Amino acid sequence: MAFHIHLISDSTGETIENIAGACLAQFEGVEVKKHHWHLIKTMRLLNTVKENIKNTNCLVLYTLVNTDLRYDLEKFCKDNNIPCIAVLRSVLIGMMDLFQAEPTHNIGRQHILDDKYFARIDAIDFTMEHDDGRGIDTIEKADIVVLGVSRTSKTPTCFYLACKGYKAANIPFVTGVNLDYVRELKNPIIIGLTRDMGSLIAIRKNRLLSLNETRETSYTEPEMVREEMQEARRFFSKIGCHVIDVSRKSIEETSSEILMLLSAVKAARKLKEGKNVFPS
Image 1 (cartoon, rainbow, N blue to C red):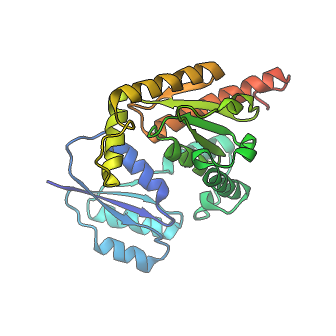
Image 2 (tube, rainbow, N blue to C red; image 1 turned 30 degrees about the vertical axis):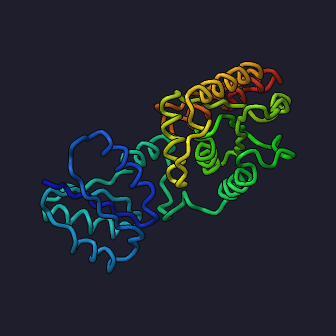
Image 3 (cartoon, one colour; image 1 turned 180 degrees about the vertical axis):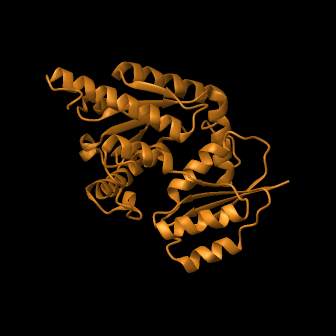
């Protein structure tokens, strides 16, 4: 038996998608069909949505700013015995009580083209220019530098961080290549990524297969991979960088750990400079 969840938004739908996805991840073995209704800004569009909502095994989640649209959807769901949840209502009410202010009810305010938005674009550009060891001359401008042997998720981690507004550069650790300049960097925090040997070899073999490469090489030979990883760990220890094992971590989890480390380093630097870590 399939359950149907209708996600209704007057903007891009990113917020409601993330909330629904986070909640659905807690339920295993449940067959769910999600129906995406984005940019619903008029009654005509809402009527089209309502025509496609059936009241069997159904849940409606919505983020609608327009009062008329909101009331119309709620009335429709009530009349048809369909559970309907305004996913941001409780948070908004809590903020209204705290701030003693009314929300503006402007659609898509989180996507406004402000300084923070353009800072994210700059971060993405920077990360593209400093992928896979490129752009060494300007790497000091990075917020984060990620090191690791091949296939330790350096690039996707850096681009995830860039989408959050952090300038991230990644440098591949290759046996015999001198990376001593990394320890001289002052601005960025340095992160070493590692992975257990079994999964690393499996990922590398899959990578070679995707390139139609079937020959045996040192790239996947266990003894060579072990030596490569040990050398990388010795280098991480030598420069005193933070090390994260990504073997059982998603890109999001690795990035969150990196950002916590970045916050801690920034706080320590402020204390060293005599600045207030928690300004009022």
